[in-house]
Structure formats: structure tokens, C-alpha cells
Image 1 (cartoon, helix red, strand yellow):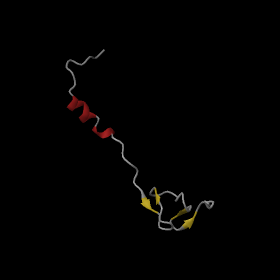
Image 2 (cartoon, rainbow, N blue to C red):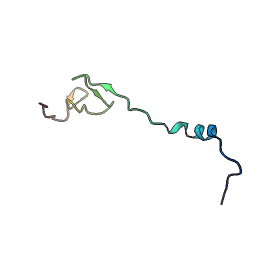
Image 3 (cartoon, rainbow, N blue to C red):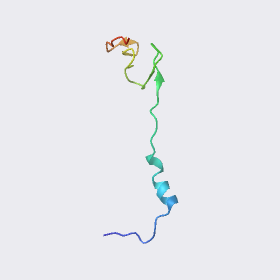
Image 4 (tube, rainbow, N blue to C red):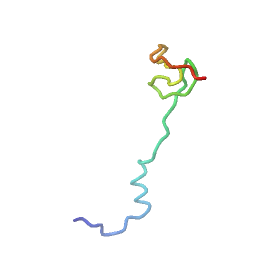
Length: 61
């Protein structure tokens, strides 16, 4: 079984993990209602995609 000969420094350990950080999803503005939505997804507020009604969304009171 392989065993490391020397302790891995905090710098080397953190450099190895540098690409594992989380990123917030990028949001775009819906052209119909102006609410934030994920790009290339149906707007959860109005149900439109590329100017067409795709999902019929119930009105919120």
C-alpha cells in the first residue's frame, strides 16, 4: 500500500482543491416579465421561453 513519505503542506493541499469551489448559478432577466431565470430555461414566473408560452402558470394571489 502506498504511503506518503512527507507531510503535504497546506499550500499544496489547497492548490489541489482550488478548482473544487462552488459557483453561484448565472441568472438572466426574462424578457417578458423581467424576473431572474436560468439561461436557456423556461421562466418559472410567466412560463414563457423565447417569446412563446410553453407552460401555463397559475396566477399567484
